[in-house]
Amino acid sequence: MIKTVGYAAQQAGAKLTPFEFLHRELGANDILIEILYCGVCHSDVHQARGEWGAKIFPMVPGHEIVGSVSRVGSDVTRYKVGDSVGVGCMVDSCRQCVSCHENLEQFCVEGFTATYNSLERERGTPTWGGYANYIVVREEFVLRIAPKADLARTAPLLCAGITTYSPMRQWNVGQGQKVAVIGLGGLGHMAIKIAAALGAEVTLFTRSNAKQEDALRLGASKVVVSKDDAAMAAQHNQFDFILDTVSAPHDLNAHLQTLKRDGVMVMVGMSPDSMPVSPAPLVMGRRILAGSLIGGIAETQEMLDFCVQHNISSDIELINIQDINQAYDRMDKADVKYRFVIDMGSLQTVKS
Ligand SMILES: [Zn+2]
Ligand SMILES: [Zn+2]
Image 1 (tube, rainbow, N blue to C red):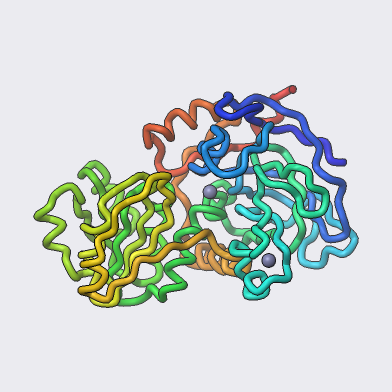
Image 2 (cartoon, rainbow, N blue to C red):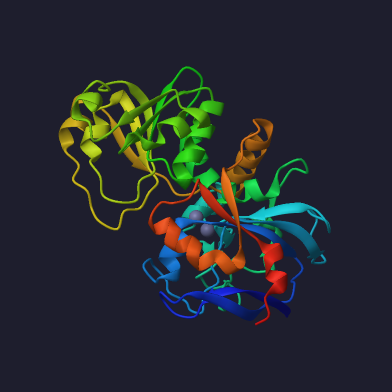
């Protein structure tokens, strides 16, 4: 067993505190990764508070993991000690169903094994996430990170990056298209960068003007304040594709009307509350409202390679693990530009 130290919530809503636990000993296909950086995703906050799905406590959150290969199992062929690698939201799946065979492990019919707050397929023991010094993962679920990548700024790509990249690839966003992004947070800021790199002209829909300057710097060419009815009306029938990153209730119909005929709006935020959808904007313009969930492992690798090639990474605020509870509080107020990333070197001073 691999002795590991990290930060855990002992119960739903508890503050995260130092926690010692054991990862499984390496199987033939497993890789032991020394975690160097871990991004802090909004879903970490929800899950640590017991607000979403499974609730397995103690819980070590974290699914935007970047680190270095520390040891490999006897049958591992793709990685060697010292390689820079990443782990995202998934650490396993059935590997046999139609979705797994199509490299869409996130839609595994048996449900994928999440990086934390989930149970290992073989042993039924809890999975532990990236707010820790080590993780053990099957090599099929490990991503390669290019030597020239900035590791800390790459960590958020493992969830925020793939969540925004996958729907743009699925719906063929590219050169000459007009794309809108709703919301400028962790997801939205990656969406703007990726859409711009794919060659699209990007507009940000946001509730206030406060983020205008940032949006333009990140690659948007226009900012529209969605509370301004006249400004919204001026955008009708403009966009080929809209990525909706907002995870709280908002007016879907006003945004749907800004799509062109046959345009697509994809939701990646998961509001816990329902939102009314009027058939009219869908019927009248043959418009499409769709959803998307992270991305498969192969596509995640494609995204990482795309980001290195286009020099894209996340805008981050690097924190020590001791500051994680304060970071959660600030995320409640959307006070982060645009992702907290934990420097796991700070764990060395933690004694549990
Ligand atoms: Zn996430
Ligand atoms: Zn499967």
